[in-house]
Length: 195
Image (tube, rainbow, N blue to C red):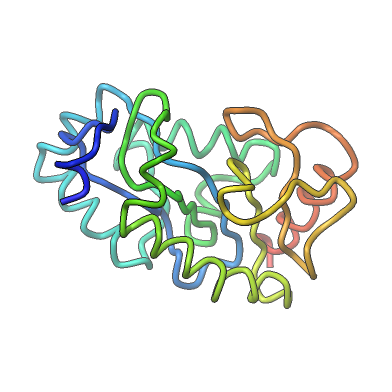
């Protein structure tokens, strides 16, 4: 309903995806703003294999994609995780990615939609009531790599919130800026993903 009444720049020919990977039990969760758009997403959304893959992702227990599952998404997530210096095959079952927005766009410009979309409100409520307390208690590691203020966080160069909730300074693409906090986060993630 909201998407029919409000002006937006989402590509509705793509399947929505608020999260990738085993969100229900991943020891490490990375927070982002919204999924980007790659032209291959259109063919992926229209193929039986792509639709089956998206359905498995919605279970919250499926691993992050291999290159065969979804080439563009594989290239993106392995690039984001490159600083962790871990084999993608070893971490794809232990790391999840959660977006505040579920709809793909080339360049996110629809800030007004974050409060209008029920899926965004649900993601934010779950993160703040379940995931953040888990991270603050050290049960999971959560790193906000895009739009911290929209997740209800401020970038904190001085350290984490509680035991393992981080909001480092990042580039627009979600890469952590170099510094002591980045190195600390990398060490924490490596320890959690190797364990």
